[in-house]
Image 1 (tube, rainbow, N blue to C red):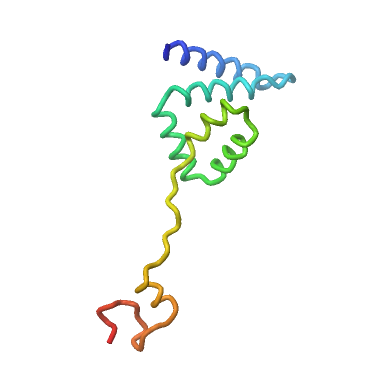
Image 2 (image 1 turned 30 degrees about the horizontal axis):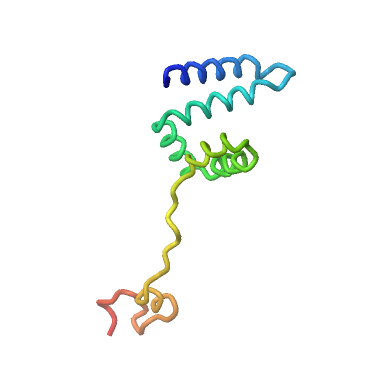
Length: 114
């Protein structure tokens, strides 16, 4: 089954590349459909896209914009490629004291504190 999906994806991508320059706008939807088929069947492709989205914020913003406007089946596949980001860490108590006041040596190193 996976071979059939990949074959359909390749056909869609090739048709999209052939028709992207025509006045009728069929190339971009065909390309997008082919890429979504690949992303839906390949964990390696999802990891590759997730890594690129993590490193390139403009690409991530573009895919987020597409996720919001795509049909539910396509947006579910694209949401799986969202980068996993850690929530911001709050500083612990010893670091927050260093952030608010400096000791007499002007250092936050605990060994240098008096």
